[in-house]
Amino acid sequence: MNDYPGTFVAIDGPCGVGKSTTVAELRRLLADRGDSVWATTEPSTSNLGEFIRANADHFHGRALACLVAANRYEHIDTELIPRLTAGDTVLCDRYLASSLVLQQLDGVPEPFLLALNRHILLPDLAVILTADPSTAAARIAERGKRHRFHDDPSGPAREVDLYRDAAQTLMTLGVKVLVLDSTTSTPEDVAKRIADAVPTPRGSVSSPTTPDDPTVNT
Image (cartoon, rainbow, N blue to C red; front, side):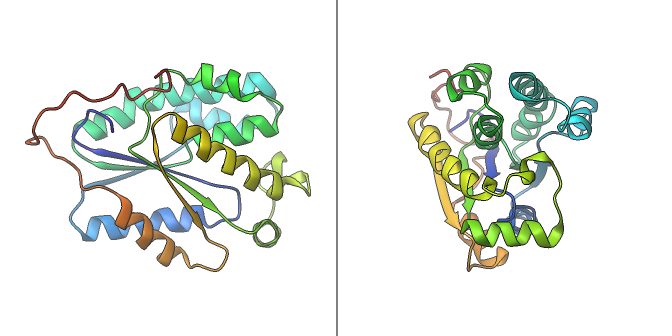
């Protein structure tokens, strides 16, 4: 658990699992219970984040992994820590788990990715959404391909497998991980299960504690 008054929740998963819809519903549920909720995404909306979004098909491998990590450190300093310090429940659509998956699909080994991200802030709760690969592939086909990772027909199945591995990696780092299958569940049902697992923000009047170091380098 981080040492800020707020609560940090990262939501990751393969394309086609209903992540964005689930995050929107989760934001509503948490706000309804009285949380001050801040929703964000990676790549972030900064100039660097927008550059990555516009050029992700042109950079590959370690170069793209370094850009994504640089944006993450910027995101932590300029948005995540300030919102957590203010006591918000921060929902981040894609975080470390997505790097461990997408950059590995791009040929970057996990040890290199963990080294790049060794000083990042770890989430209080990491949610991994998954789905049957055929269901994810059908959803991608229905909405249309959005980046080069969709060009590989085996991509959905590989993503599902790598996200399973990423969940294990996060747990070895001491992160609380919630894995949910959205194949037959609605985004509303999935969001409800996540909301039940999200701890209530501690607030600025909570008793002081000595937290564990909330970084990958533990």
